[in-house]
Image (cartoon, rainbow, N blue to C red; front, side, top):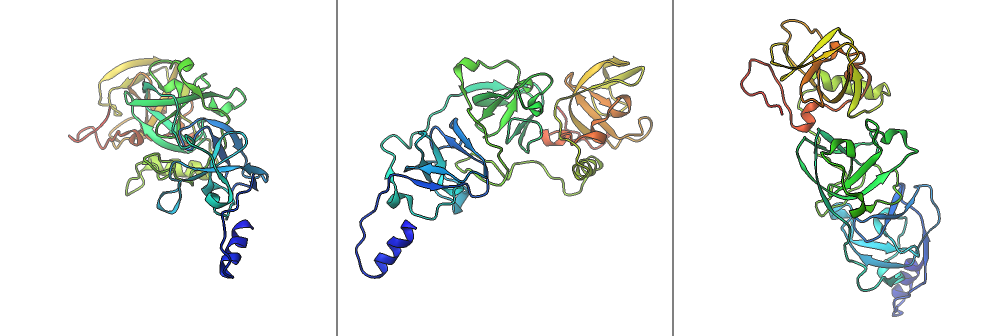
Length: 339
């Protein structure tokens, strides 16, 4: 309303001096939003608003991280809670620089804690700290990460990865489970992430901080594993990662490569518990197993799904090993690429 009034006055030839109001009430533009301690995506959250919120008060403006690429802007709006929301995510049609006061010197500063970590297993980095969420990045084992904050939600069943509820936000602007890391991070040296909104993969933070257009590899043709994952999604099957299973056979060989011709690394026995990282489809169909799916365990060897009680590719949207950079064509070919 204020912006329209200014346009009208200018149109009739009256010079307008910027009219500053104490606060403006607005609402999210169809998405859950987070109010951050500084105007950048990696800053911790002070407050989280549901997309159904109708009463968000903003009191000043500042410049921060560019939102939504070339079509976005760098304007963030400050609230009385001393946190910042991207103007892009709010139903606000005015001009903040005219309607509101500047948040002040130092309001554009970027500050957040950091800590080095390294992945122990193939590790998903999800937009929200639970295994159901969309995966933004797939990190192979022994990859360096930079953590920025930690979170733990004891009420969220879907944040439990092999008994561990701790997740860490990284500089890739997504969350990875502590289970996938070599060492327990020093949480005393990291900020808590604060309240977390239920984010969706339909908004972008630029400045090399990607929330959509994740680099998930997409083969030109769907393999059987991908077709199974696609069918699982349509059937409403739950997404899983680092899932526990047990051996159905009297014994099962865990092999260096996903083929019956490969070197045996370890032998599992009936009802042994194993933890699976990802699934891969092999073209080795010369003999048993008839099921072409094999799974990489946390022992870094492959076991045939025919030897398990619950095969991930049949029950879950389990990550494909190729997402983590692994490729496998045939045991007899020279260009096999695996860990």
